[in-house]
Length: 319
Image (tube, rainbow, N blue to C red):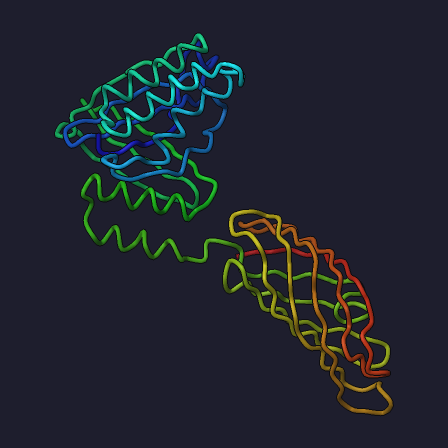
């Protein structure tokens, strides 16, 4: 066995009450693709396991698929059964053949009173119009057999995982290097909303500000804004670090300066430093932005002291 592809396929029929996604595992060898239908059904494709690779070595997806039903099969006291399953896993590591995999997974699901089914065995020489597509966290594999198109969808929690699996599948199906190059480029592409604007009440510029935020990296953004501060005009300039790449929820850490024109004891130009420690909601693909932050003001010009402060922001992100 060369590769395991954990995916979902759209079905009609009694199992899905007219239409839905049924989980499949494709066991790919040098000569064939063995399609196994699993008991799991969903209205939308579920997340696939992120493991991939040549199964001459143990792989994360291989073990995860086998362990998936274990939690519901066995309460902790059944140590004998747990040991039996561990023995199966150990033997599969040594010989991860299609036959051994099918036997093991059949055995595990039978303990839940469920069955898996080997739906099809496709000879790879008979596949036509094979197509691999990647879009963000999703991979689509499709091909024709006897003029009938088969399509499988695999979703991952992170785009980076999806790109790695996509590259591995390109190797398995020996797709040309130009396509691989495009995928590698996509790995570092800015597939997130880079621009955002928001209005901040209080916060880094004391009274409030209107800001543009440019996210030039999934974890880094540059902010510039303008505000009227009663005692002058301020221009917050910040560099921010955001946690998380694939989520809408981020912890935000930032540092910067605020030049102020006029207002401080007759000075025409003054500066103070400021920090940001807070929460930012910003969808990856764009939309509503919400921020709430602790924003201390450092070396505040009137007394040169640090003042605790906070702010709240609302705005919109777009590509």
